[in-house]
Length: 119
Image (cartoon, rainbow, N blue to C red; front, side, top):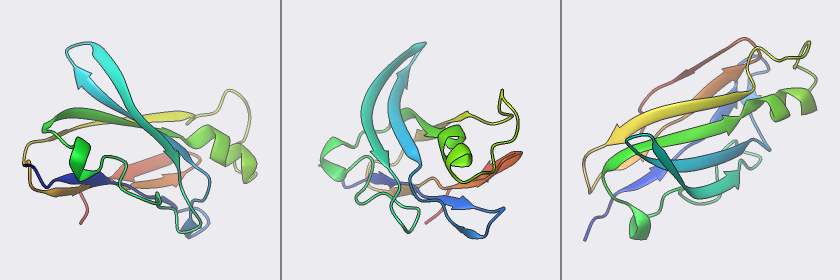
């Protein structure tokens, strides 16, 4: 049985704090098809309360996290004019090791973001 799992978190780099209240959706991607697997929101530490893809549901493949950054930016007064430069941020990535912990964080500001494979 696979032991892998996926976690994420969001840091507000403009304010230097964890981004609380960011809605995140997880999709499994196959060809041009997206199947929603989970939806959650970040806590006070900018993390989800549990893995967004826990061990019992983990499988290697291509996935997409969608971060609803615009809602967070509006709520924190950082949004600027509509339409927002960043609203929904999709990150597509692959997970190949069935026993690995994959961590995909988002570093966010109103006009830029970055991500990496964390630990």
